Length: 269
Image 1 (tube, one colour):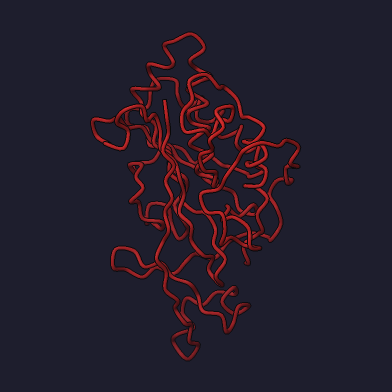
Image 2 (cartoon, one colour; image 1 turned 180 degrees about the horizontal axis):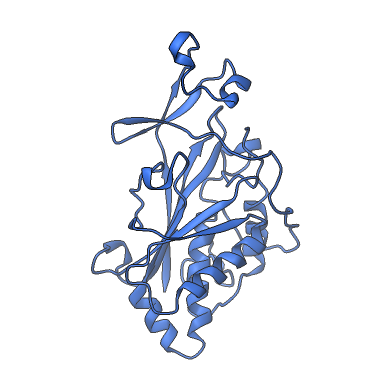
């Protein structure tokens, strides 16, 4: 089985904020604190959407994971992130995720939650489950949607097959990735609104084999690795290799890369 990582770069524009009379409407304290810095906006499908301001304190939600192993790893967006490193998720923000339940194999919800927990442990990023969604998992999704409120859409995990998604044809068992978008202010980019698409027919067959439950979990973990910013590597002893027939757990390079993926800087509030 193999995987395809997706990278999405969002086209942006800057919106200057003018404060006079009625233009105070919609101005936040963050806008005041960043006075003189244009508020970034997303240009999506012909509409301009102001990038939501990060909420909460500028402090990590979970402790940073120490890099204790060496091996092969790479990043989907190796530069352009806060602090000059790779583009990563904000470790001071809870990463919400939802499941699009259509075609989800019976009993697979627990597999998803375990995979997310394993990624959280390896990255030091905090995840929160928000339940099922009626949104179909797609890399063409809007990053800000009415169904989720005035924020970036949560990570969505869905199930499809080659019959309705040609990107899953052949040996591809899953797809994963996130969008790289600047924060509300400044040029530093952060990962947003990740997507995982699992071939439900493939994982159903995998689970029927002995030990298949763990291998199915490894499929989801691999795609979540893409979501938090990791790219494929050439080392077959790493779970982030494009193909995997037997690995059930992260390799040493995977763990090093995941720790670094979770070690980004907080987005300015």
